[in-house]
Amino acid sequence: MRIFKTESAYKKYLENISVSNKKIGFVPTMGALHEGHLKLIEESKKKSILTVCSIFVNPTQFNNPEDLSKYPITLEADILKLEKAGCDVLFLPDVETIYPNESSRNRHYDLGNLEMILEGAFRPGHFQGVCMVVETLLQIVHPHFLFLGEKDFQQCKVIERLVELKNIPTTIITVPTMREESGLAMSSRNKRLSENEKIVASKLYESLAKIRAGLHAGMQFSKLQAQEITHLEEAGFQVEYLELASAKNLEITSEYHSDNPQLVLIAASLQSVRLIDNLFV
Ligand code: AMP
Image (tube, rainbow, N blue to C red):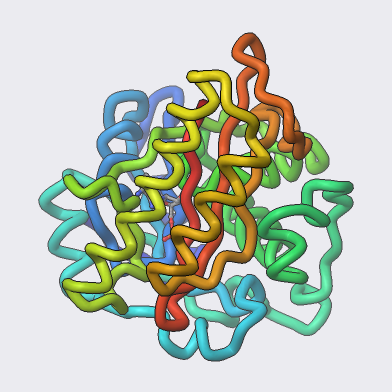
């Protein structure tokens, strides 16, 4: 695997290898890699000639400074995992490459209602930060395919919007959430949980699965929502939201429609570790 820290080194490399019909697949990450990330690499390798992964802990998407300072960094292990997975290129930019000046940190994207709801409501400015880093990475890496995890479903919608707004010639491919055997969605933040807390954390998925089963059995969403928020709070979570929404535009609803694609989304903190998950119903 080749590792590049600057745009010019990466561009030079691309010029020298003649990837015919350069089918570049790109997997942006913030590192502390787990099998969820590696699944994206695997999907990219199926579709692309060259798979590029980036690791960059993006400061502008952290609305909480403590979350940024505690974000796990495991670069050596990440490099080994990427090599084993057959990733071709690791792009490791520094902050100055992504944000060369003040104005590069002050870009604004019209994300409409998408940034007012769910993650947007609880993490002000988060999706603006996501758009800034992804726009710059896409300009540098120039991928044909961009692989994103459905675990961050709202982020997928935001990046779809970014690609549309900026007319970026990249096709987005979303990949289902990888889970531990317990159902817990894999996440870099799980590294901050003890083994016992991980068992408790798997209740998030249990709640989502119970809501799905309840909806299929004809129960009202509002009743299921209240019941599961109580269960989770009793287990030690602080629940920020637990909502049913359209998978098309994330419009929040309390009506379950078996013929429309919908999902249940949750954000909750356990011992100050903020976790998110979702499940198609
Ligand atoms: P992150 O490093 O958390 O910014 O995530 C980088 C990419 O990996 C994003 O597209 C995430 O949605 C995706 N991802 C994170 N966790 C998972 C998971 N458990 N399964 C599949 N994809 C994931």
